[in-house]
Image (cartoon, rainbow over all chains, first blue to last red):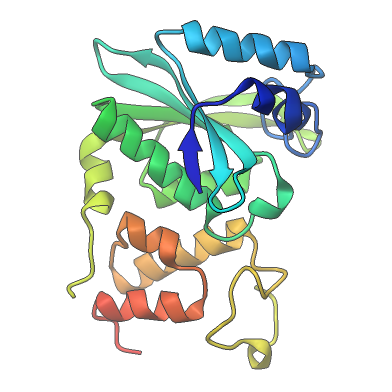
Length: 178
Length: 65
């Protein structure tokens, strides 16, 4: 996988369809409204103008196939933090280590290139995959909105998490003894 | 993975085992770190795509196999 700037072709193509797909948006806050190519192009244009949002397309190396999008948004350049988001749009890539590879690249961009101190995020407590990957990267739970969102036939917590640069470095620098 | 042990080989991984989906893969890595008191590097996490590469990473961290 590699990350690159999104294009108009991305927005008109599968990208806009993912955000109208019930399964892909199952655990996303903005899942209730259908998405259109025009909406996606407008989002792309707004992202390019934005000073506090970095959106990147996730592309399969070798085929150049667009398989998802990821972002660092609400970037606070003064206090150096941002919100992380990853969506794997193509279902066959939601297996094995693909999500790990994407999060690894995005955290490196955030901490190394953008010089962030903290990357934060959130997930619904009915979403075990996001909980597992955030735990794997040492995101720390810092709070919960109790019973906030209807998911899977019940109201579930919205969980808030954060990863400090120092905690990220423990894994980024971890290596086997040789 | 909810599969018989006999059906697992060192080449087994997400591509060859239908039930080896993303959530189970991440839980497996978390359990291994917890069980052996080790921390995999970022590049190791991305490279562990089957049992052979997982075993190699464990050996690098001094886990006897």
